[in-house]
Picture 1 (cartoon, helix red, strand yellow):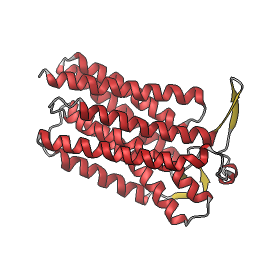
Picture 2 (cartoon, rainbow, N blue to C red):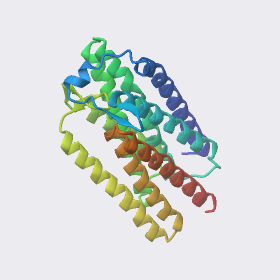
Picture 3 (cartoon, rainbow, N blue to C red):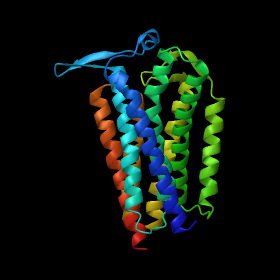
Picture 4 (spheres, helix red, strand yellow):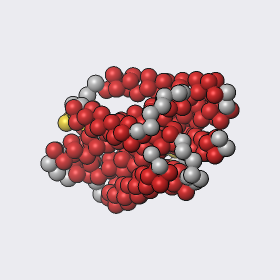
Length: 275
């Protein structure tokens, strides 16, 4: 893959993140104005609220802001990748850019729930939920591909590998059963095999960090140790962002997500620039 084609990929991913972020902004307005019926969340046992520093916070509001800040992360991270490209040829950054796009799909959560609350056809809610799940799966598979390339796997057909990850993600999301009666606190329908999914995600995260740690010893380069640390921060932050609604847990999650991504991209750019 040439430098020019990589730049086109980064530009396309950046614009896709911007579009999804705009969708999230538009869909979030009714939530922030308190105009959405929350009975679906209450029946699912997924509506929570608490007071913090004298202010009341509830799970739908937290999920809305979480979706928006996830989309903002994608825009900022992909913008940084695009504008700090420096003509480097890092396969790890190429695949990490697809991980960076994945949180932008979270902007569809307010839209999916508002449609469900408004009585839209369940097939449309199913479709949006599967798109969100496919985005999450694509991001994790792409991050795993990035770690494999760091640990020594070589294949010049990066586009084919990314396309295969996308196809697998779509197939898994399409085949996963959804519980039509239960919404998560994140405002999407709960997928089936929930404990098994969490276990597989945790194992994939461990494998990703282990690959980067192995790469640091194999190459004997300090930047890969920073990348391994950044990967652990990113994965931990994303886990908090997707599973929690309390501000005291969401804020550290976003700090880990943003800071860890900066460590990964900046260190990989610097490493490949001087090779």
